[in-house]
Image (cartoon, rainbow, N blue to C red; front, side, top):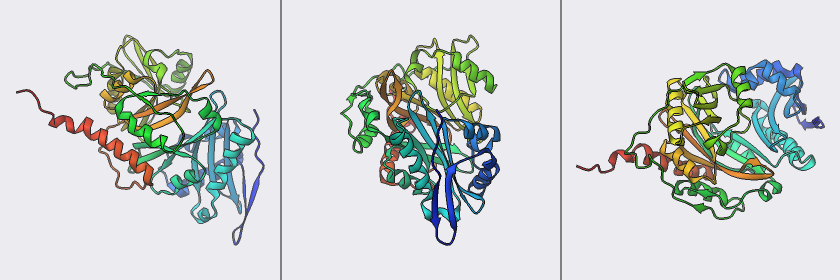
Length: 398
């Protein structure tokens, strides 16, 4: 489906006309110069740093890459990725040159695409974004566009310093009408659900206190002996031929192509991940296994990616499988966000919970977040303390 957006000209007194338009391949060098101006050499999204990936995205109808141009310079950039099959979109990479930030360029660019894909063309049911926390401005921007605050990703990236990001999403009426009601969640997830429910109309969740084999921490979780395969094309091709089974049917990770397989020598378990050594980030996107415990798989993944010098691993699990949620928590993956309608299957949409595990010391010194995100952070820290510190003070039998 061809994507077309009319150019928008903003008249800026003293700075001339600014044109907001779709990016062209001849803009690539100037786009990279803009990100280098704002972030130096620390920007980690490969679609910006890798020219071939940038070219592919600019030419692909499933991307809206907008730029703002003034006096021959690219002074703003924003990307929306679309998944037409699952009717999802992700907004990312928003950046504006310092001298043009008072003109609400980021808002204008975000709204142009948001209105086009949700109202005018009706291409997607929801749009989500992650916002950096070096300042509160990106959080206020998405809030002003009607995005709902869903949670945080603590210490999710590590470039110069640890970075915590916020998760936010825009939901159409169609998304909520297709939503499966009455999620079944473990008690530790309930506070995150309630923070989201106070912002958007949802039913009360069913709370089920599932307990797993390793919940009392008296039995050490055994480890699988994973080997790593990092050949990108091989990983991608194998992933698309794989039919996910067991716990992996209950996870989702939109807009991530795997570039890593963790596999046991007997090939009984294969876990597909996206990872980035530059910012020490990894997420689980799927897999197959004959292992009966998801806690064992997740603990083994955590140990392996830590050995690979990654600092963060994440998994997103549907909100209707409390036993699997419990396994994630038993493996010390802590819930930090609740994402309604994240997963689409057979015309219905399913809520999901974000679980993550970080291997570095938690560092929130440079985090600037607005009020509701602070509530998510408090709940996360409460669970982190319970699972990493308070266990040491539990009374042991003499």
